[in-house]
Image 1 (cartoon, rainbow, N blue to C red):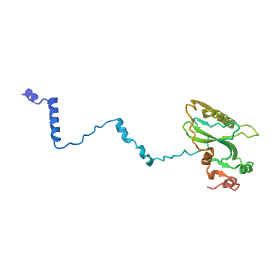
Image 2: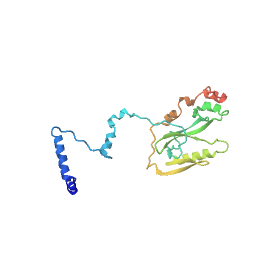
Image 3: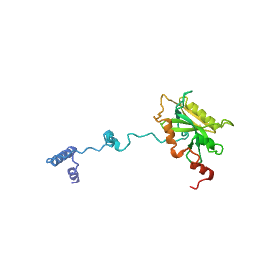
Image 4: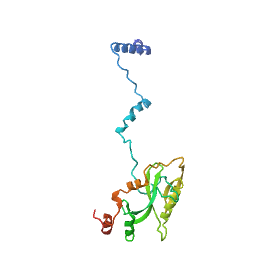
Length: 236
């Protein structure tokens, strides 16, 4: 008896199941034609395309006239290769110049007009002449490097001398990076300027100086507030 019961309750054959499913679908679709459901896919290129922003509408998100970044007057960043624009001997410099710079601990540097600086030089140790040079990193970041100069009389400073050596190597047409080890040393990249051209912007050197030293950091007179601060301190 049990054998007979097991035989009658055996699983239906696959072809029977398929026939029943087809018959059921035919009945449910007999009066309407619903839209087919697209299968869910993973990692399909067509799926990734739905995230793309139409470039014709990008003005809603970005400024098409985006300007170069803010200019800073500081040494090229550590671990970063940079180069400079060489100047032709006997011609006026276009991408470097001498300036008197006033530097105070914890403050942004100021530039001082030569007539004012010469009056204050004897009484102030915060003012010194520097050579400000335009540079660009291999990643396209432009900046200004204030290279300190050795005094005309007195012992040369090894940091000043080695910094000038690094500058000379950079202007010879190479990518270099600065290494600080008791003095400024340098490493030359195997990448040449031909392989990786420098991306200098079309800004002039004067424009970069203007951006690095806005009006409130330009000292033109002897009654500038900075002199009172240096003479008597500040309370804020």
